[in-house]
Amino acid sequence: NLRKMRSARPSPDPAFVLRGHDAIVHSLAFSRDGGLLAAADDDGMVRAWDMATRRPTFELQASPVAVLAVQALSENRLLTQGKDGWYKIWDVHSQVAGGHSDTDTVRG
Image 1 (cartoon, helix red, strand yellow):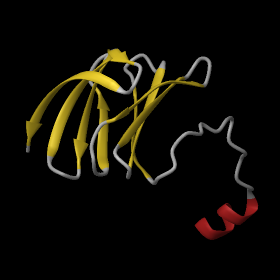
Image 2 (cartoon, helix red, strand yellow):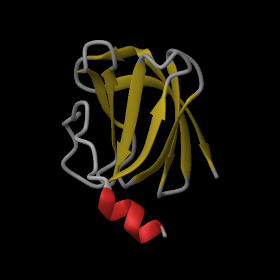
Image 3 (cartoon, one colour):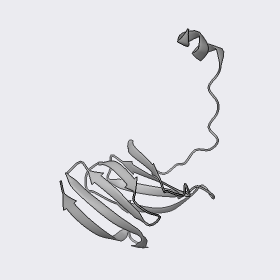
Image 4 (cartoon, helix red, strand yellow):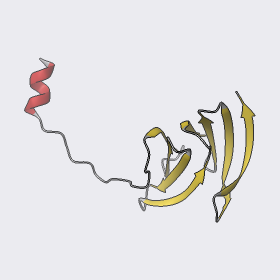
């Protein structure tokens, strides 16, 4: 019985918690090597953490509306899909202070 299994074993505590988003997170994506975790939220922000140090590595305003999906394309490129219908490819290594990044955009 599944209900008995759930009540018999308490949930484990998380190994760690990554903080940074103020809005609902819609999507998470690990880089191919597992070294980076990117998260996209309802405020249009994408934030990433270095998984070795568990510290934030960058944030960018990917959309003026919610970002519904984020996907790692390579170690330095992310694909985002905004609620506004725009798909954007971000070169995260080119990001500079102030939240700017090189992007390619396509309206879907």
